[in-house]
Length: 292
Ligand SMILES: NC(=O)c1ccc[n+]([C@@H]2O[C@H](COP(=O)([O-])OP(=O)(O)OC[C@H]3O[C@@H](n4cnc5c(N)ncnc54)[C@H](OP(=O)(O)O)[C@@H]3O)[C@@H](O)[C@H]2O)c1
Image (cartoon, rainbow, N blue to C red; front, side, top):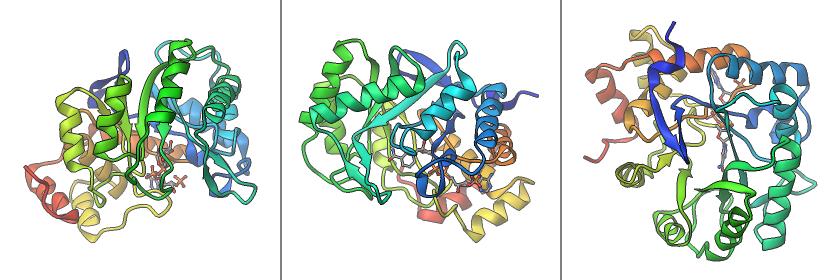
């Protein structure tokens, strides 16, 4: 079975990764806060992902906090060669599970060290700076101070590559003047397509775009068009939504999240799903026509 190799690769930092990866956020407890009900089941999802060829796992030390990274370490260390663990810094959790900005130089340094310790690594492969000018979506404002601090941690050898998350195109341009940006991680999926132009411009420069909430996030995508197309292709709506993203642009790397081995297998099988032209046209209409 060709599995996720059917979906080819795209460079993430120094090396190519498979275009279907895994996002670990769903492994923490409810509201991404505290431990999961069944830590063995969470570790089983991680082991299954790697057994099926996943070489790109997305995480953060603020998931839990610390919980998701500790599960990754328990399940997978010593890590297989070629596994890219991508983390993000720039936020912290309040005692009420809220998501708060944390990008002073001291907080970013602490976050890098927390990630290194909890993941059991000497260097972090890719660190995304998660901008928190607004928690719910990108908002304009300079990112120079936190990105300069992260670039300094990179120069010290603690971070190999830098990415940006929850950013506007203006912030991406500002970021690229300060550091080599290898990926952008923003909210994007079949129904949420504000970043169409940004994706195309990053593709031209061979920079990876990693959509978060590829399946719709905490409330998975629901669309009668998506369900009808999926049924015709003998696939599930989630597989069809992922296959659409793979088709959307070659620089898109997927990190669908799940706490279930069954959903993981289903999602990875999307790599083998080909979407015919008429299906693509219908799916494009879910959020309006795609700009050409
Ligand atoms: N940079 C950022 O600000 C940011 C924000 C959010 C997320 N992220 C990253 O992006 C990754 C992906 O986002 P996400 O996990 O929040 O959202 P997602 O991948 O869009 O969707 C996850 C949700 O879909 C469900 N699901 C997964 N596969 C399914 C299937 N085959 N059938 C039915 N339901 C399914 C999951 O529930 P089950 O557990 O029951 O499968 C979960 O509720 C995260 O893991 C995280 O690493 C980054």
